[in-house]
Image: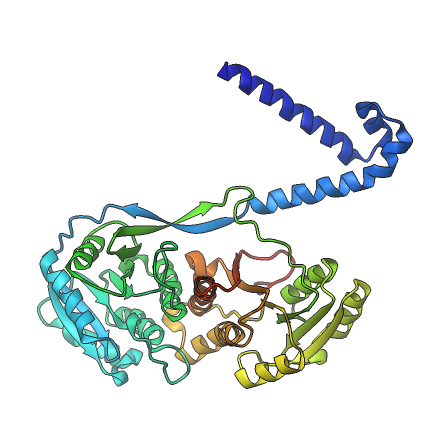
Length: 456
């Protein structure tokens, strides 16, 4: 009987497709013949049927391109290590965490050599000299375990010390010709599920940076390990197992070891609802190619008022024409010159133009290999995306819609785009953090856009 059911379902699907093929042809007479109805009756509903079918096909195609990060329990491994391992930390990393990692390496069979860098040594060239000195003593290392990413202090150019230090370490290891696997430790960079802790977006940035390092320096990359807030001997054993294993993006928790996966989203699962508020929506980068596309879509969906930001306001190319176009679609648009990475300026804008929804599409991209990127240019790429998102989170906590334009660069890395990947990983982490606080947030990691976007 199972075969019979399959056969019947196959016939139904074939008949459905035949029916919709007739609808899509737009031939009222043919559809009337299929339905056995008067042609005049069919002609009246045919346009609506065609539109309905087209929208459903488009939605199905879009849903077929959706993926989501998930976490799978994996074998933590035996934790068998050997040789000398360099453990690098900074002044801002708690001593007990360093001690816990050193203990895990010792129990795993390694001989750890600890280097705690002062803030002056987080400079790339100072660090390279220090590493060369350490590497020369005793004949090299089997691996490097970095705890620098745990440093949550803010650096001199606004980049978290943990991120800036991780960047300098990746570069300095190359400068010092230390070609062994580098493992970067974080805590709170990822969440394995609802029962896990809240994501710290600044920690997520280290993972974005690390994914690019994995692409650009595969021969000397180990992986990323996220540890829980409380470290004990059991967690340490699992850490050692990860360092001696095959997974390179891992979350170690008291309940087990989890490996990061990317899986296709089932059709209809997690589908966001329609935004139907009668209030205004802020679109950052609203006069750019992506922001303008979003503004048009919101206008078509019935949003009555749009606030579009750009650095140049109405002086931005095409801004006046966009306002006129949106008016024709039924939305009143206001273009405001505002640097959303300036908290005071953004607060002033929101005071004059209260909004109920936010789409953060502003950002810049700069393609520079990791070996050549400077901290200041790294900071500039981070600034528009991360600071803008952070201030919007603070200033519009009760938004009915809070959408962040992220990128696949933050999901699996993109060569030459370390800062961009770190910035977008921050956005993904911020969305998770907001949702953990009971607030709305959606981070969409886009691939390259056709005809427009940051890559053309």
